[in-house]
Length: 294
Length: 322
Image (cartoon, rainbow over all chains, first blue to last red; front, side, top):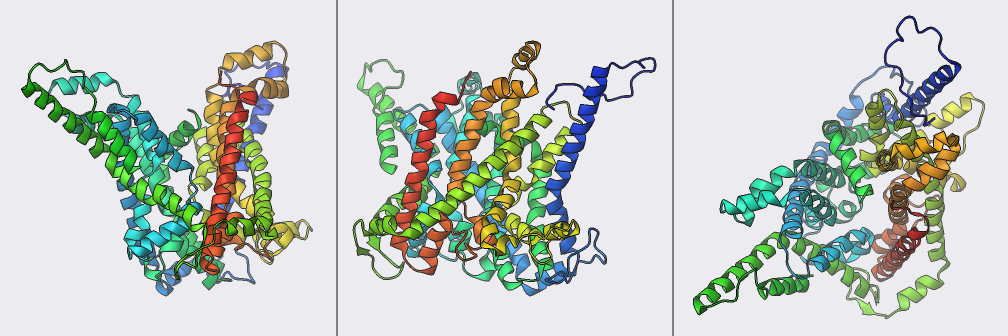
């Protein structure tokens, strides 16, 4: 299976008729591997396909199952979704919160990473250790006091209440610091000789040199916010302030048996993330791979 | 945290910056001003992240410890009860249940995603056509929210007209009641979760595989080692750092399983899938027992920390950092 062999990309030149038995069995193995992988990929993809088909088959409920290709495809379920619920508002909420969270995390992570990468001060290692430790704390431990804290400030059921705990994340600091450490110090020195201070070096030298890492962080921050559930569930009570995942979970309670509506909502939730992913696949994969290898 | 930053600033300010000892008072003043400016620069770069982390992570962390020592319903003033919450939790059979359900989830989920992710990573590491596309498809569930994954699988595994049972019926097999049946509810959640995380594990392991020097594997082949032998004696030992990362992260996340449980079963049927975080959520927001919920969340944190420390301690035995 993991035999490193080149899958032939072109037909063999005429004249090479006498393949050895070994080459033939290797060829057979390669074909088999391709078949297995494609079947696996189709199986992985099927739930997405089925979600889409269900959402296009209005009236799918307890008694009926859609067919592999929707019999009378229509967007009726989507129309109902947006008519019955403040669903457009919900999508807007999710977009707004995810965008602000992403921008905020880019800013807070980049500035902190600059300090940890470029500004020596005594106790820096300790402070960085404290930052990393915050990554280890499960959100569940924080939910109760965080809720009490924001209620004391009168921020429960507000956008601000949903946003505040997401403004800074140690993961982003860690990611960008790694990237900044790869930027040669000679560049800073050259800029400093030209009279640039730290703020200008940060802005004109460092940031342009870590664009891929900034892209990776943007995708992750956006994805984290777009898909986050527990905190928005706890802090946002009004239907018109809810985010997509929370509204979807509620949708299920409301339309227990109307799977077409629930699946239409799911499609709406998947599409924006899918678009971003297709656009930035390289950065997502790199980001995941890099976190795994120190 | 803020105290730490203050310390750091004081230390920075109290530190000479590659300066020769001052000869004149005027230069001293100049140097002091420069030190102060440097300290302020450091602060300016740190504060945007330090303030939110202090206010919304470290502060609540300490507060949670205090709340766990009280009886509190989120409204009336909290009543100090000392370690009573912990004593109650440790003697309550329900606590053991929610931890056991969580363990059941981890024990089912981890081998599934690891073996699956490894198989796909090994396949993608060969000269496969359309590798990027395949990798993209396998990764797709990773970017999907847990809630959507749970809803979609609830629909796929719908006992009466879900597609899975429909297909099984076609082959003359009567499918189980999945999430409506206490015996099958946790397997349903495990299945959905493994489907979602397979791509994540695959990418990490693939990065690990690509970091392995192919000559080592070729050498084993020349020595006559077969495919399985090469996998177990060469590839897996060299892949151990990536494996270690996957196991540590999966356990940390596995203990915190919640979103998919909440959306798929809500802890049911009959409490069969009541996991630790679902219990924390219910204690707080359904029963108004925030003190107990905080105690339980601290217990969970201690368990996660202990498990992680044990793994980091034990990695010397099997992880091989070349």
